[in-house]
Image 1 (cartoon, rainbow, N blue to C red):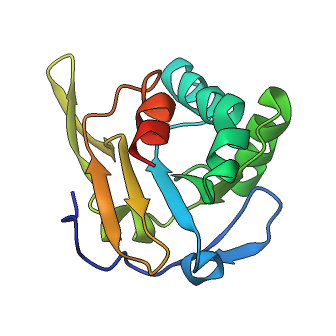
Image 2 (image 1 turned 180 degrees about the vertical axis):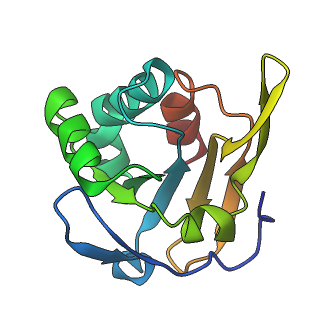
Length: 150
């Protein structure tokens, strides 16, 4: 996990509509940047729908929500449409941003080791500095937790 107080690594990734998005596009706003393993899975759906329900409150506080996974643009589009997600989902199939933010790690599942996304959420301030970093995220609680940090 990246250190609080460090500059958030810049990136350019396609969103669920295939539009290229840069971290610098959000300068002057707080950014909730959350990394999740996979579209349409139960934990990721709970987390995304939680951010969706609270999105008006995040906007009121001057924050945007960006979800990032290695899923494709098409997968993100289906996820957005199925659950009516009002925020941006970014596709990182090459895992460049996942690695830059130190969330692509070895995980153990039923004793078997494999590489995957460790659910992590960063709060980035208006100048691009990481002001909060939350690891071992509990999917269903994360949206409320992040709203509280604003």
